[in-house]
Image (cartoon, rainbow, N blue to C red; front, side, top):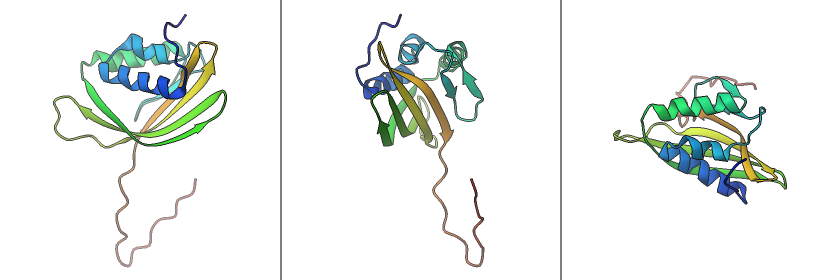
Length: 145
């Protein structure tokens, strides 16, 4: 049974980033739902599904000893009665480094449970660099998705 109750998705998100900065595995896992359907994708990493895989990944990250400072920006929130989706840029500075790393585009999904709001998905990807001005005479590529 979880000890913490997060009355809003914003409270859960604040706890997520506090745990990330502190490198606190127990606080991190307090934010996550205890469910085998949770999913986490770290930037450049594989899709991890289930509580045990997600926990093991955070344990490995926190075990590195690196401490992070995270500033969240460009937040877009879609919220309903039972589900909230937060799209953010994570601006991360690793302790001891002087230059911030490229932002991470992250999607955080929260589910309202009987014990407050819990994270069910975190997906981080390197944010694309700002587009450069097209060179004269060069046609830009067509992108389909």
